[in-house]
Picture 1 (cartoon, helix red, strand yellow):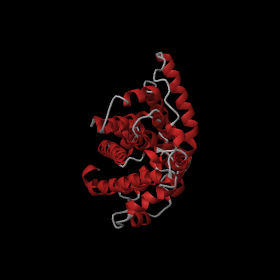
Picture 2 (cartoon, one colour):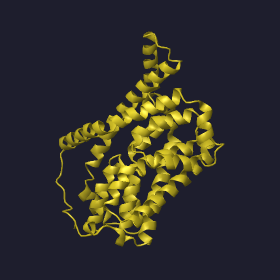
Picture 3 (cartoon, rainbow, N blue to C red):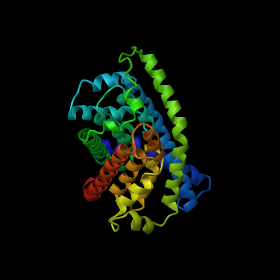
Picture 4 (cartoon, helix red, strand yellow):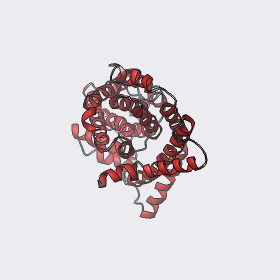
Length: 332
């Protein structure tokens, strides 16, 4: 009962939804209708995600202040083999939410001479399984789904990095990166006040960048939630379509958003009858393989390595989708 309260009222903020509904009803808007329901969904999800966004970015940025790139390089340099991939994937969980934000760090790690597979484990895990996604997924799908999602995301990151390492793809990294050299691995100690100021600055900066995508995502979610017939969603993304996972992955790849922009869309799709794995595949594709991030990555690696990276991620995401669809009845 305590956990249900935390999930529904603290993370899910259902009290806020009820409060907004009461306010709209008092203003004469029928929240049971399409227009009123859309307005309620938009206001509630925008407020909920904004609150969680600011809190999570502040918290994660504070944690991240202990792991600047220089220190991360030093930590990763102590491990070898699969353990290096595991640590790299775990470090990816405390980096920024957007895949584009992870690529400069990936380039820095590669320039420092870290094994290529290790740097790719970081690049995969950073946008896919950050700590923010864990909390947000808990608020929508529950703790079981969130924990399994993060676990399988880390497996994809570790396995992908190891495959790239075994194939010896170093020659497909642009030469200017490999010859850039490393930087000083020491970083100045920050006071608690410095870390708080850093976290606040990161929160404000990230919020300004992300908020437009939140509005777009919530708007799309409100449209799906109240205007698109349920049988349309079930036909395209429900259990009756065995290719729903593949379709969701292919649709998600060209898009650009982060976990905060995709959550309201995922919430609306689940409500309309889309399968859980199909929804999670869509989210993973959007956050990990967005078109802008692939354009940035193309500047750092040659087409063969870029294609291998996209292929590994896409296959992993599709397998995860079918896995979640198979176990959906047991975890929701």
